Amino acid sequence: MNLKTAFSAGLVLLISVMFGQIATEPMLMMQNTMHTDRISSISIDSLQTVLLTSSADKSARLWDLSDGRLRQVLRPPIGLERIGRLHAAALSPDKRFAAVGGHDEEGGLYVFALDTMDIVFRKGALADRINQIEFSPDGRYLAVGLITREVLIMDSRDWSLVAVLEFGAVRVGGLSFAGDGRLAVTCQDGRVRIYSNDFSSFSQYRFSGDSKPYMVRFSPDGSKLVVSFNESFRLAMLDSLHSRGLL
Image 1 (cartoon, one colour):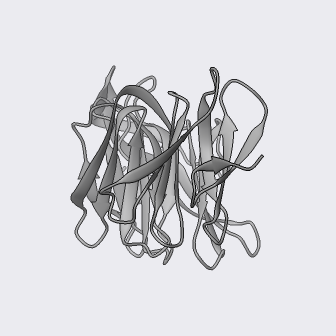
Image 2: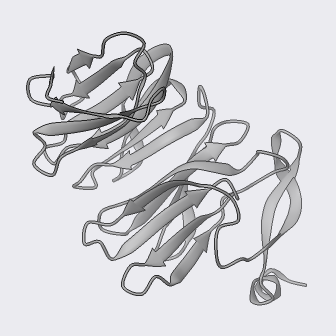
């Protein structure tokens, strides 16, 4: 059975196979319409026409928001057990690229060109597994948050590394770009850091007690931030321009 036949039969040949590593021999995966494990992230384009989802089932999927139908399945290299599970995905605002990442032996990042469905860029040898991925609203930058230690900022024109935001052994939570290019990052040390649009400086807000901020989102006008928490079912609202609490 050649690769073309495998696809038409509803099977996908993927490069994989040793425990703890990306496989070196083919693995067969059933081509299901829906995800078969938890969905780890969602992302939409700027015109809100396409939805990208990633999952622990080791796939990412593109959906048409006009009718809810599946457009395409993205499958980066996988392996046995957890190797290949996707923790994060982001769709570029212009729908040109889909970036996915998660659990392999190098915490690898994969970028797909959606016109050809080819992997056009991969970055491995990371300090930890990927936890969050986010494109800037203009599509210029891609922020890649690792579970601990770093957030990498890449230029989508050539995928070069622009900046590395360092956090030591602290667990990194969420990422969010404002329309003006500022980047908010939450960490389990109780802080929300708001970086300038050139990533050279930041302001910060620290929550009291043992609060562990997790996900974060800018309001459409960039003036406010909404933050969720790991340890409790609550939300907080911040003034993003003056780094002070509102709610």
